[in-house]
Image 1 (cartoon, rainbow, N blue to C red):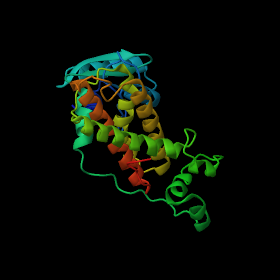
Image 2 (image 1 turned 180 degrees about the horizontal axis):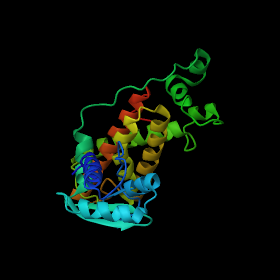
Image 3 (image 1 turned 45 degrees about the horizontal axis):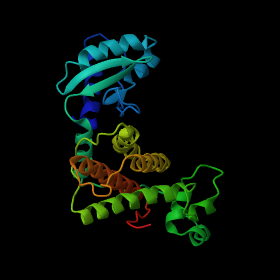
Image 4 (image 1 turned 180 degrees about the vertical axis):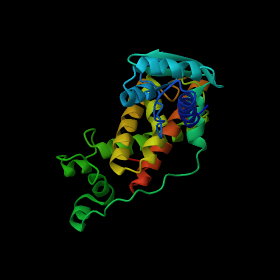
Length: 273
């Protein structure tokens, strides 16, 4: 079950509970599921019970229990737990991280370009096309000249560097004679990165350039932290293993998502930086 499949399942579950008079609520137009930031909290989490409680005044824990009983009977769902004030933590049957990576790598349909105002000529001359376009999406008060600096404080540099890093990992792996293959990365530090990858389709669907830019920053930061903590390539005399191939697949998926987001914003995604 992919994140999109699970989203539809959760929404359908809410609708059926309302139709059965178990919930007296307006069925939301959409719900979100996200990979929890910490291990041990299921594969995905949703705040749908909290949203319904806010609209109805009914305790969120009561709503969560109604939905939990229904969700746990759905095919592909192994367990559903209630956490905190009413979050639903969902554990799927099967390797969900593997499915997410395969779905991203198999997607051949790039996001549509987003409408952005054209930077004025003076800004284009000063910053160049890529930095000028990104500057239109920056929070107020950011020094636009920062976008020309190749350092960590430059958000555009971090995003483009993360993409270039993913491409370097793929090139180095080819030199070592192995290729990516979706599988278990055997590393709990991947949670934030997988959450950002799973969130890309939802953010892209908003068609909001500033939100997409902030999402790419979060994704790039999570990717760079993960690659620093978790070696993608073998070290020394170590031979490439299934774990290395799985981690390389996550790196490839990350690069693909970063490139897609940058292209939607009309910004180049360099293979070298």
